[in-house]
Image (cartoon, rainbow, N blue to C red):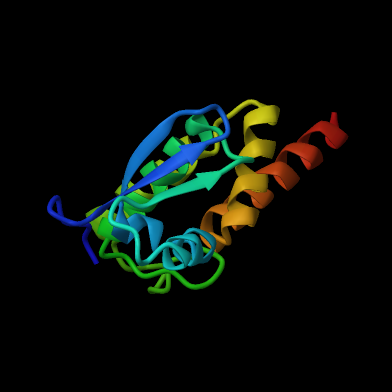
Length: 144
């Protein structure tokens, strides 16, 4: 499922007042945002408001969703590759895994905002990824 450049754009107003133009395909990846759009289906210029999510955090979520939707790799519910361990990973999977590693390299506050935002937006992959990273950091600090 690749987001096309000609897809409909949805305006998303963030808590910091910034308005981001987001492809409808990416908006539909979040059950929460999809519901907000459906509530305004009769309007010509749809603007949905996310009062608890900053543009910085939403931009990071959008970046992740773009790569996820464009990836040919298949993942199970916890984001683990569902192919043989011995098989060579496809390039799209390697790219996706590299993004996952980079995606979670945030300071603790940003990670907290990301986890909170993805929980609200019901984007399970990113939520799970953020929670796993938070647990990893807690264990790492406890071991010190």
